[in-house]
Amino acid sequence: MRAGTALSGRYRLDKPLGHGGMGQVWQAVDLNLGRTVAVKLIRDEQLHSELLERFRREALLTACLQHETILTVHDAGVHDGHMFIVMELLTGEDLGKKLARHPEGLPGRRVVALALQLAEALAAVHERGIVHRDLKPANLFVVPVDRLKVCDFGLARDSTVPSSLTPLASVMGTPSYIAPEVWLGMRAESATDLYAVGVILYEMLTSSRPFTGSNHALMRQHLDVDPAPPRTRNPSIDDRLNDLMLALLAKNPADRPTATSLAGTLRSLQGSGDRRPTASAIDRDEEPSRFGAPIACSSITGDHIEVFILDEAGKLWHRWYTHGPGWSAWENMWRPGGEASAVAAGFHDDGHQEVAVAIGGAVHHRWWDHGWSEWHTMPPLDLTIRDLAFSSHSPGAWEIFALDRAGQLHHRWWSREPGWSVWHDMPGPAGRAVSTIAVGSHSRAYQELFAIVDGEVWHRWWLPGPHWSDWHQLAGLGMRATDLAVSSLTDGHLEVFAISAAGRLRHRWYWREAGWSDWTDMPAPAPAKAASTPGSTANMLTAIAAGTHSDRHQEIFALGSGGDVYHAWNWLKDDGSPNWEAWSEWSPWYEMPPVR
Image 1: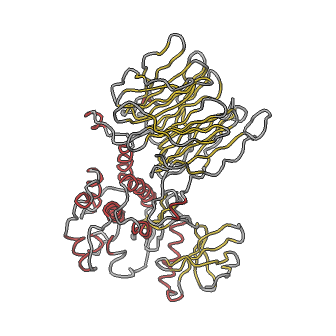
Image 2: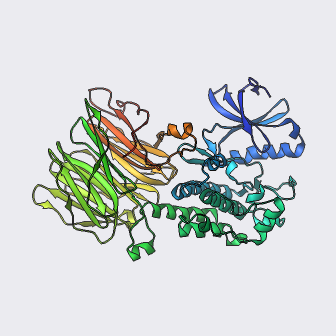
Image 3: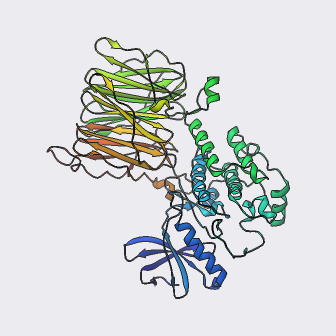
């Protein structure tokens, strides 16, 4: 095929991108819709009936799998005797190339995030009765920001459909990733894919595969040799992750976890890495391993906004923006000693803002009122705090919410008279454990609390009385949320932002006139350095914060896994009566200078 060829008069080939397992891949343009796509063509030398049938079945199998971590197929057809598949065009690189640029392996939390997406994809694939049969890094594509796409279903088998196809060789797949039962000539099942996942995880974390050598040597090792525990090759690997990989590499398929159970385990690992420990850790009263809420922002007046960051070393940094001079440099703000687990910031009237950090079960706070006060300590809670949120529903009234590592909410409030209340417990939705909180207000005498429970977003609100409403789910999110932020442009408006473990960013908003919108995707920042600097690491979003610095301007801040900070903003476009049609488009994302 040549550039310029229009397949079936619709898909114009622009440039070749590479070769897949059975065909050549081109970048093309869909002339009907005007979008750029990828087109996979079967090569001339492979035009025999069995491979054509495999190619056709790849298109059918992939098209029936609708999942955010599986490559999307748009169309398929035949042009001058050449079969083709039209797919979404991906930007980024396959996992094999990414690993080649990281001979030391990838960080554990990044591996867990990628593996979770793979497990969720396989759960959807296996539920449909399909086995991939050729999972390997080259068939996993990583798009910004660390979002995974499972590709190349050329060897996949649909167990629900009888097939007369014979194997291409005595063993199907890529030798380094082939499970023992397949070497023995048994039929590949869902557990076969899980074995390949074990090899891929092992490779991501140790930069080596469990077994190497010729095909004959690989067969013998996969059948008879126990893999070296991953921790012997990378001592920093968590014990539970080490054990999980060994379970995936079990010789007996029945001893391997399913994709669904693997996803659950990875969520638990990911949560414990983000200050969401296991029940046993709670019982032992262990300290969490890293920050769960490392970013916050606040505003003193209509032309000021300030962002606070807890870095991996436990230092508290801040920088601020005002009209005229613009953004300040990062400054290190001294805080009380001890391992911090969360930071929160907010204001309760013009000229007064407050910042707090959680250390163990105690909240330490200070405030700005023509200068920063000394740090003050609140009465401690019984368990370590993993998230904090501040809110104010009227001048001189102030409320702080603390989430402990058992998932229990607590709150206390301050007013000029009589001062601070004691801590009060607040049950989560139906008494369930909460993993993250955020709070905001869109008018005086009104505040709204948001919480993540098992990846779902819930909210409740406070109205004069005082009275808290029941919990209500903000349904339709379409992903498992890991962090939240809330902002308000003006009276009668509220906006909530949520990110997933894969770095996907969604938001929905409330206007008094129109009510709640649906959840909508918001583009996440794609670090330019990841594409331009050899050996650099593409970030995934790990935390977000949002705020306003006037009645007409809001800003969102995002923290990447590499410590990079990004921000974007929008505003109300006119000076008339604000409503949901009067706001601007969001600005592009901008990367802030490194925190140092």
